[in-house]
Length: 226
Image 1 (cartoon, rainbow, N blue to C red):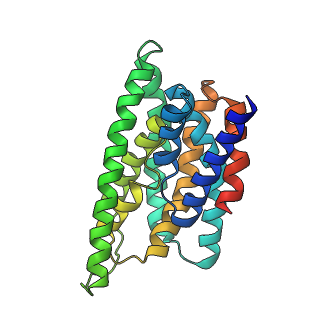
Image 2: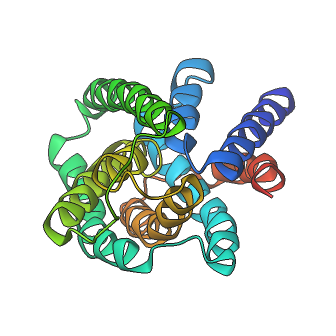
Image 3: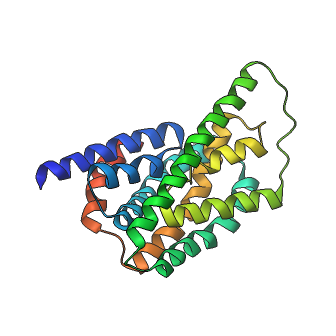
């Protein structure tokens, strides 16, 4: 219905604005809105949100890349782990089976959202420490931990669409507290592009995406992220 379509676009506009401003909150906002407000089936909400994110995130990533606010080494090792794990997350959803997928996804999304909420608290505490002048060591690359962050983020995004910004960016802040806010957002946005592309490919491959729903979301999200 037209009014529902317009509401979807307005929701996309809101989420696009938040992603463009902070690099966070795409899946953590969009997927619950689709499931709880618009009553979209959970799998369709997750898959359509992922495809929407795939179109949004390159704009922010390119902006930070051109500004030089991307730690390329960290982004590279995140991508090495997150890309295969994102596709694996989609495959794991297929193993759940259609009879239980909606309930399973609602529970999994809820857990991911709780993790996102906790990560925001952690981020606020670390930023408060920064403002008090607490010294942090140099942001030296830690490959094993960075791979673990990428793997966890990939699984979360592939299964729930939540985590590419809200969870990964805070884990990066814990491991690399010396990174500036711009570097955190820029690094996260750049690594999120191949991560979300892998998850989107999996959902498109298995036919989970509702293209009409995705289109209405993009009508609002693209102006918002810009």
